[in-house]
Length: 158
View 1 (cartoon, rainbow, N blue to C red):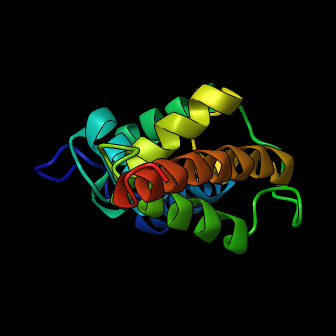
View 2 (view 1 turned 180 degrees about the vertical axis):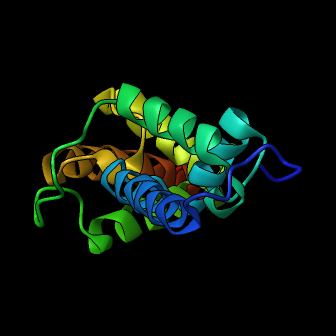
């Protein structure tokens, strides 16, 4: 036994198991569509560390168990979620709305909360392409109303 309480009988076996657990954690991170900031906050909440590389065997097990409670996600299938152009469009429209004063908070988090109210889906990257279109159309309608009000104020209502 080492001073840390670990055995040295099979260092190669422990390293192999560690690498396999880390690979599974990162695979689940990708399948759950966790961005880096969310992933690190998740790790910190579960273990107190922000990097999986710093975790011991028991902590890696807790992280895997917590990720599995979210449900083993279906493998990522290209073309079903919103594409980068749809995500950029949502962000652009949201920024426009902030410039018109139609929204107070121009952050990505506020946009995600808005999308959740419409679709009941927690994260933008989890939206389907159809859900993303719903959000975009709602944002366009808000933008058009804001432009009309902004224009009316600028011309004295004429």
